[in-house]
Image 1 (tube, rainbow, N blue to C red):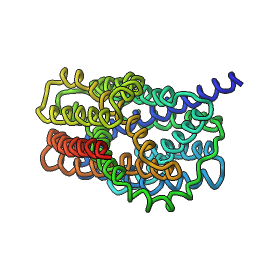
Image 2 (image 1 turned 90 degrees about the vertical axis):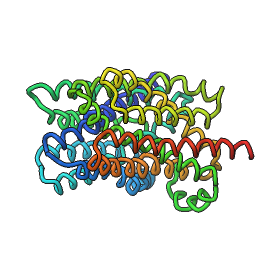
Image 3 (image 1 turned 120 degrees about the vertical axis):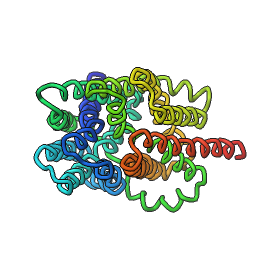
Image 4 (image 1 turned 60 degrees about the horizontal axis):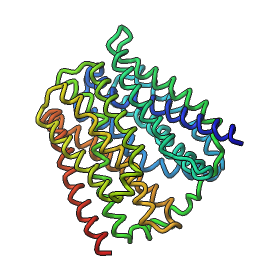
Length: 386
């Protein structure tokens, strides 16, 4: 039995490693590729990069329902993961703007299944065997960071920046094979999604925290799109972009490990506040056009922001929501942060960049985070009154 458990955990770790390696190969460097190779402007880049978050809002619940109806989430995850890799190759062969948008649409439909379905399988399995979900998710951060660094280096060789699409496909193909062997855990009923929506939106603290997630988490995800362009503007090469992302993403790992201890001492909302302030300071500092070396050093602030916000946010949702609608709450929470907040920040930042340049993007992200910090203070005060 213990051997079977270890094998399942290794497969889950491997899936996260390869799936996030694929995302790290594509997402951070795609905006640079679209600008330098395809010669697109900021509005066009913002549109293409924001397609995924928008479609995630629509298709994420549908993938969940498909898993529930079939009772075979691992098989669905495998198929969706492989097809996402196939559609990612479309960027190699299509070069007109509208065709690139079409590639982004089909890619997003299948890629939107990867995180929620794999997280659902992982959370259910780790709860079943009393294991630590964070010990699995850390492999995702590791894969993402290694990929950006490796692809940055390879993009500067004779292979060129098209290597990101081949790496994206190969990594997802490997992840798809692993997905077939994942634990066959049934999903909680998604029929409760529509039934629980009305009740959810009567919970004031939940609504405020959704706004906090929109304003703090959304800009952090948008940074994955524009950080490469920012580093490039400060004199960084593809390798430099890779180093910056590697430092930023790997800094999440130790903070994810210590988050539980900090939360037990300080509380969920204070940790969320620390994450929000760290994000705000980082974005506003980048607006001042710092030197490249300082950018590398300050990239570890991402550990404070995402490394703390991700576990604290999920635990806060679980604490304030009644058990019978927790699945609905997590689905809505994910859609607002990964979907709506990501889309708004990414798309609007593209317009800002087109009109005022890349540095103004970070002033915009800093303003959003500042509002999120204010709302977090309000939520902390509201908690004390309850």
